[in-house]
Image (cartoon, rainbow, N blue to C red; front, top):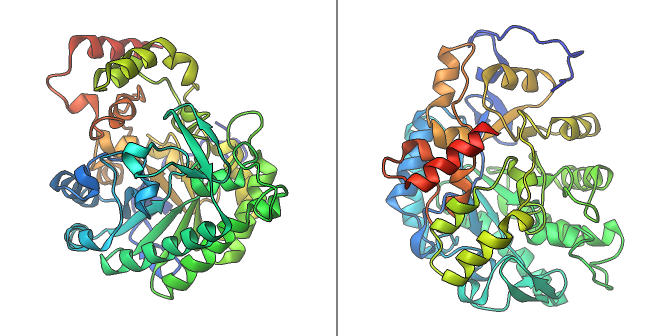
Length: 420
């Protein structure tokens, strides 16, 4: 990895002198340091509501020194649910969310919630209707037919994003992250791969951005002057026929103009290039081990390696694309993707990014930020074999290092992937 410091590798700074441990603002919000727990799906919401496990995990990350921790994948409507154990942001769960945010604040961290809509990545049995998207079609990953949204539905859906910000405020969150990447609904409108509309919401990039702009108008009005708004965007979709860097930079500029306080620079399309988001291999045996339907289990075992191809992992894997966004934008940027060592994090921050975001490293070690403050050469033991990702489709996300009764076949799979 060559960072924007002339390719040099400076010695890690002390905690007192490192940018990593200095406060910084996201709009009206000040974080105690430059770290954010990324909005990675926890799978800890049975009945689409917060659990004690969700509470305990985020409080542990807050206690571990994070600047802000983000609850993930909160659907703005039931139709936006992609998993039966996913959070659905609605008024009935506000007291349970308030308990989480209060206890996060008690540990000195800020609390954020990611909101969005999965669009075509659902099934009637989960979302209660035929899945929605920018255009009609078929999603092989569900598998299910998908219905393109009508004009009035598009406007109504944008209002639901604004309502979610108001609910987040009631629940005590300091910030809301709008999910506009990874092939979720906003991304499905942005990408020519999924948007085949012939009206004012399709065709040119300006038209494909129209839904996103309407959403941001609603969101920024709801945010007022007391909530921070971050947006997760793609640096590229990660496959031929998807969005590439130049178009994604234009999307980012439009979001900056809309008033977003920070952008989180990610990439990939879950329904087309899933491992481009996370990198490494998908442990197919671990993934299917927890599936209940026999037909699905065997189908994924037979075709999974073709449907979910491996993407090589390297530290800070979005850097080469992300630095182009830093050069084109002025608002704060959050770097995410493959951060497991303090020296790499220091160099990313020194390259002009205001914040860094981690997920798998903090699942492996919730107090990793505190350890980085103590150790100049701190390095996380996350191996990126992605057991946690494979498991989350059926159960709560968990690191295999923390499980005592993992079946031998899955242990062998982890060992094999770690040797690659």
